[in-house]
Length: 131
Image (cartoon, rainbow, N blue to C red):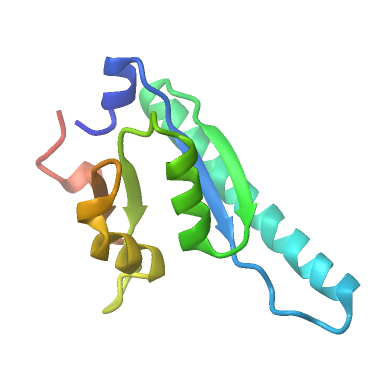
């Protein structure tokens, strides 16, 4: 049902790929290269997800790749985009759900939109929640 939402209501999907900023390195060129490679990997991953979304729903998402502190980037994005209807995060596999899920679930009551958390092992094809 969530998959059909943007098309049904005329909304859009924005994929925000986050790249952690590298700690300061005395060799600035090395740090820049590491960040560029991480950005390229994040962009390739986001484009793969975008292709799957397009194939399944007919919606081509907007993709942004940002380098920095994840909680700050997402918070700033939400503050700058009042039109955001939902924040969808994927939980990490294992005991700890990940820093974004931990941060935003703790602040869920004060977010400007609903928060959806997708389990790491969720398989929609095996779910009985399919429309």
